[in-house]
Length: 396
Ligand code: PMP
Image (cartoon, rainbow, N blue to C red; front, side, top):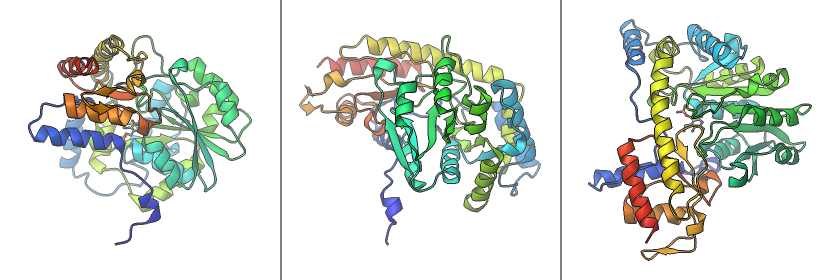
């Protein structure tokens, strides 16, 4: 059967591909250490599961309004007001089927063919594809370790053209594990003043920050920033709910309404009992549940960063957010390890998996071929084992 041009042009997610390959090897009995995970390794807290079960038992099993049930939209508005200093009314909020869907739908609602979207390396693999699917073009700012992989106001100013419709910001960042400081974000927001550029601020890792890192929502930086920003967030990472498929977008009423119209034809509402569970998730036990997970990630992230920086030819910035280390391993490129020629991150990841049974994600699909991504969403024991293997492999 014919496959559309559009679908042919979209590659499968590279992160999912590595995880699948590692799972395949595990199923064959190979002792693989997987650093590919994009999901917390904790279970969803019981108080959230209990709320889903109660809502099912109470018969919450039918369609809801496409944009989500009013009490959930109100609970999200309250969360954004209290925690993020953002004053959205519930009708400025739409509940989507995961943050990935929020990104897709926001782009469909805002972008036209010919529009340019500014984003920077390293980027989440889904962004370029969703931009393409909206008929727009990604304008990619290349970053490196010298600025901690963050873009500067000068770089942003230079990238803006008459065609620029959107700036994508993802802080804390996947795959970079870095977080923009409030001051850095403010400087970027100032560059946008007087332009027509909207901002899609992907804040899905907001609660996973470490050390003295401060999180600030882009839309809270100024009134101007508020008016030009779509704030994207979800339940996957904060509450360890990746399988529940719950994300949300908040922003100007006309865009949120447009997203609602699209959603009413594409998917309709997010799963009904999941929405009731999401109200519970945002309730009183949230802070404690999140903090215990955050602390554990912090411990692992520090350990992983230290160990990586202790390896020959590996340079890793401090992980200030999310659950990823993104070391530069390019000084090993050009070498042969056990007969495998390492020319870039793809060869690096493949040879490491084949020879040492360690799965990590090559940086190339994130726009940074010098780097590889290691997730610390796995036990400290697995991290130690995997890093011992990596160190040993690199020394060959
Ligand atoms: N944004 C970023 C930067 C992500 O890493 C992810 C998950 N990998 C998402 C959004 C979407 O997550 P979900 O669809 O599970 O809500």
